[in-house]
Image (cartoon, rainbow, N blue to C red; front, side):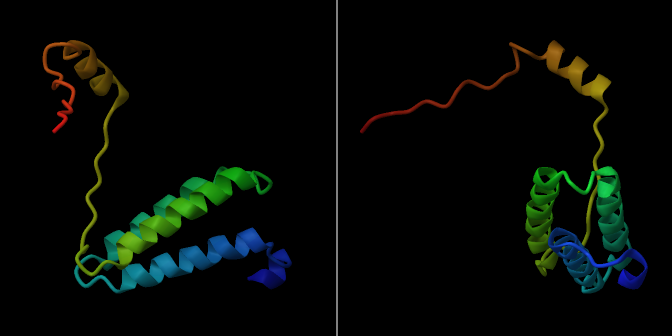
Length: 111
């Protein structure tokens, strides 16, 4: 692949390495290999529009990806659940419950 695109930069190599490591971690999951693989592919595709020279964003996403990879490798994690929250439902629910249902602030007691 690199013979078509030339040599990869250091940060591109890190992204590719992380992608491969995430796919390997997905293969280790017994019951949900496909869902993990799809999740990894979807997350990496989200970053396709990031410009190559936006190093700050790419490095941030690399750090975030490495933290997620540590979670994927956990043997106790066997499945991913996706939750979506629409902006309209979250804004209406937060405005209707602004003062009456919020919990009291934590109290500090001195010995």
